[in-house]
Length: 491
Image 1 (cartoon, helix red, strand yellow):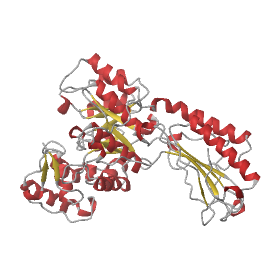
Image 2 (cartoon, one colour):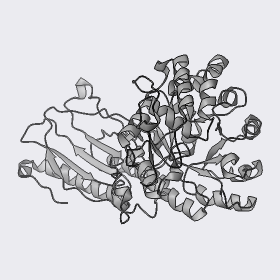
Image 3 (tube, rainbow, N blue to C red):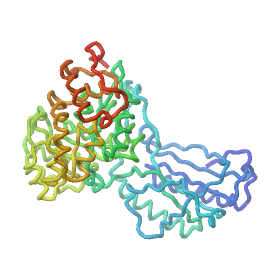
Image 4 (cartoon, rainbow, N blue to C red):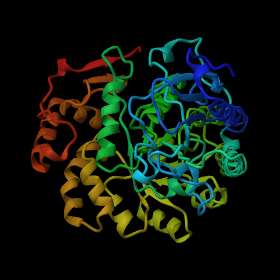
């Protein structure tokens, strides 16, 4: 690797030797961690303009077609020397890589402030594709995911780091910074309690409004949501092209993947299409997939099992049972069969609490798919949590309902809102409500149209009853006129 800087010759022989070791390390890491951005940063004992820091950087996932490219090394000298707390790989066993989130902003204790060190950071390249590019036919996302190999890769990489730093006499100050996207453990998904089926907002021309979308996600995070479903029924994934769909998953991961679990709805009634979309979803970094059973073209129970097993092999998966939309129930016999797969995280179940209780008794993780039943599902029937539509509007109240113990009073208080949300097929009411709250533009992709004016007035009364402060956004709720809404048929 060429080192480019006018002052490089000023490095002492010792520093050159150290830089050579780091260059070697970077080359080896390129081989051992092709799915991660690897940075090796060498610090000298003192820092001035004549003794710059050497930064070597390799880019991994996040580049187009999952190929990594090399950035030329840069020599920089930060104005103030910053050191990082030592975190040795030889200390007690590390937590799963998917949970390593050490911060690199804390300085060393004063007694160590003058010591030299090396900081190693593994993180996903923060890059997302412009929404406009998703509309260009000749731009394609990765056709094949290497995600299934990443769990073994993590272990190999950690072992390599352990012995390399111990026996190659390199400094032992090591941090794993930000978040490792290689693989989310299934147990991480099983532990989620409040998952929001997030709404996808639009610009007047029908394209994604990413600014509004990011604001919606941010409000979920600060109110305690642990996961989001991207491109689900509520997010209108069925009205998106697959390029749009995968781009939105990737954007969500890149912007919020360290703060919330991103679950991509990559299911389809075509097994081949579901496999392809799931590969792409994991390739852009989603933490888990949501899969529905084949709809319209119904299949046998054996075919249903085969369909799910074909996608379960790729990573953590939540099965979604909603017969009111698919026209076919996923019976317990199918769930019990596929639950033996280690990648099955659980089931989003919409068939009521008796079904949920039966699964819980068998040790299967269940999320209620019905906001009106989720309180009892959680506290009386053993459900882990809820995948919620109402939390788009009142995430704080839904967090309280799911996390703070039995609260029949709050549950009753939320019932008028929940019933209003589902008076028409979801997400019609939700789209109308978010527009009235001023957090999204009043744009609908057809065939969805806003609720009539009388029901929009009813929503204003519900907001006043629950308190505007409990809803997302800061603007006053208003009753929009019919002419305020934009209906988009082609986008």
